[in-house]
Amino acid sequence: MKRFGITGGIGSGKSFIATIIERMGYPVYYSDVRSKELTNAHPLIRQGLIDLVGENVYFGSELDKKILATAIFSNDELRLKVNQLIHPIVRQDFEDWANSQKSDLIFNEAAILFETGAYRNFDATILIYAPEELRLKRVLNRDIITKEEVLTRMNNQMNDNEKRKMTSLQILNDGESPLLKQIEGVIESLKF
Image (cartoon, rainbow, N blue to C red):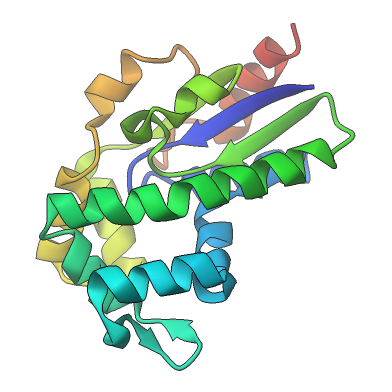
């Protein structure tokens, strides 16, 4: 079984591309979605976040994402501690999921594979990228968030030019380039 990462900056369309790959019949683990589920349910993560950020980081049984985002995107040390708390648990969850799959190719969709070094755990990583203005527009249309908040998040991620140097497997999701042809080409290259 070969394992591949799917990554890209905020608003690049990585989840959309992952959904297409999943509809092509390949198993996809959605790290960001699963991380949110684990953040609400996993007792070690809950207690760790309360210890790091405070009781108000949860509203009942749900994480207050705005409070967490505000805290971590303005404090690099805190963001590192939160990542060190959550990422190993999500990584183990992925491993458990991967071991239950029967496909020759499986995929893990995650936002910060290059930034965390997790890309090294895969046979290869596929980068989804798009022009920054388009990414900004997508996020503003999708999330209840200010332009400044989006730009802060973008600036806390490695830029696409750096990521493009780290992998030859790339899909341009600019709304103009044919996606399916690019996806099929990448999938075919992974089969060997």
